[in-house]
Length: 231
Image 1 (cartoon, rainbow, N blue to C red):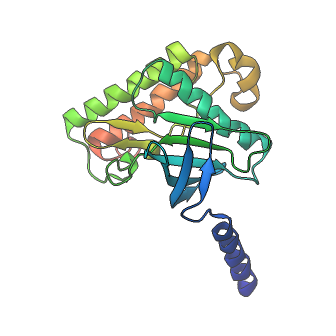
Image 2: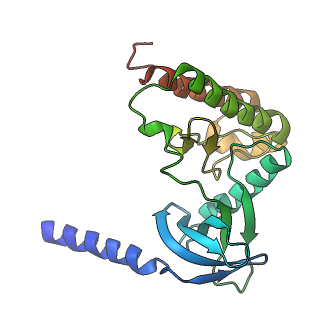
């Protein structure tokens, strides 16, 4: 049985390795052709690569849609592009810039070209073992709450899958990654989200966002979660 489990695990690893695009692969889009430089990781919907535009020389995070995703996951993938465009119109800075969204019926690759956020320069706040200095924590919170304010009041959505690991901070600037799990717009919340969230209203979902961020802010200030402190 152990040998069989090891065989299945090895096969799974081989398939993941086999499906990666090698460095130097060229992926054409409408605005730019991107050259793969490095594999960064795998999500439920996409493989993520560091790539460079051949014309602009801009380094980007290229999220390439996986061929084996479900229709629901595929919808989440394109949903991220829609949300980032809506936030860009509102001129908030923390979400990564969307440079290009490319999808064509005959295309071999469907992808999003996003601002590349260097993990060394912008480490996840979830990996910090010590609290942030108070002024840093307040500034990170101010930037995050500004994004949530725009998301709730102007875009009319809520951040249903907010996770601290997606909050990246370099001491001055906040970057919030992964926007493919955001609610539908306010006017559709009752009919589209009812099955997922029961009878919650948009206002209740927005309050959930704020409560979750409040827990994250507590951790930024203290280095511990609220439950660990008995609160």
